[in-house]
Length: 227
Image 1 (cartoon, helix red, strand yellow):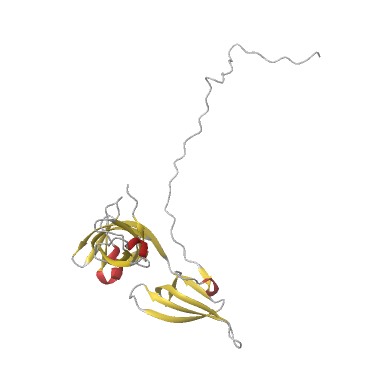
Image 2 (cartoon, rainbow, N blue to C red):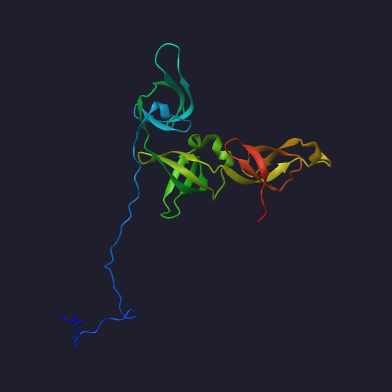
């Protein structure tokens, strides 16, 4: 047998690479939001900002200290803030003990306006409103401006707290005028910004200027960059 020749059929024409296309059936992929999970973690993992649940109540860790006494078992001493009441308490955990993490998650909402004693935040996608009372907002109100994006904290379907942006741009509305030579001296002076807060600023800052402020400390950071 000299060889095998390819079978040619007049009724068959192989498709060219330019005309042949292969289509996979489309699959509709549905995306479901990831739900927050509750983790049991060790007291050794506690850090400032940890959210834990104690006796069915959410708490935020404000301070902590790992203690290893000369005698007896090691432990972790903490200062906690109750998300629901705002009260602080001290609690001690045995080192290595399991603690339940509070089922708290964040969503970005925009602060839109104040309605009486309530601060109104809005979901810009669904236009759903979320309200916080004055006592819930507390001192954070002095950095809050309409149109500002904030993180709302949810626990069991309700808002329990919110987080400001770390830095905010504010306008100086009242400040003593500077004196020639103040810049070289490196002094400071109080300035009132458009939210009503008072910020200590360098002597060269003038009325009408925009400044950047750290909302965690209330400290002046720099003059805002002009756009």
